[in-house]
Amino acid sequence: MASSTESSVPVRTAPPPAARGDIAAARAVVKALDTWQLDPIIGFVVPWLGDLVTAAVGTFIVVTAARTGMPPIVIARMLMNLGIDVGIGAIPLVGDLGDFAFRANKKNLELLEDRHARGAKATWKDWAAVAGAGVFCLALIAAVIWLFVAAFRAVF
Image (cartoon, rainbow, N blue to C red):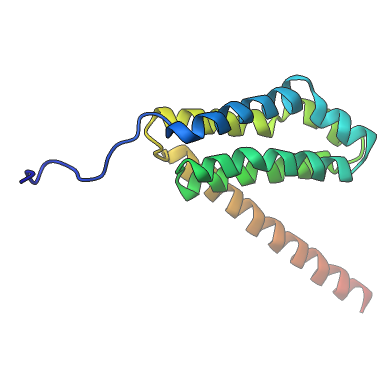
């Protein structure tokens, strides 16, 4: 019989064997989109649609994270990174320059590899990043509502 100090939950120190191939494929996605700079180039050549296509390809890393047992908060942080990337890239010309600086896929691969090295555990930074993004979104929604009401009052 196990003592009460032993945990029945295994601590994962490496990705499951079946996921190693997916992580290698995720590295290839990052190499193509971020290292070879295909993300900003495609976004420049095909505005808006190119950003959506590269984000769709980038979701492979998020799906890999989900398949390998990453906590939901880490997956939320990865989706947030992709959302920021699409938001930046959607701004004509300036967004394409921003795509060179903000590499969502590289950030997501780093999260995936780091969290696997930690035994697939979330950190306070994951929670802080997602909470900060949530507060920012709420503030943005409040600002849009305030501007709408102010414009409505000015007109009527």
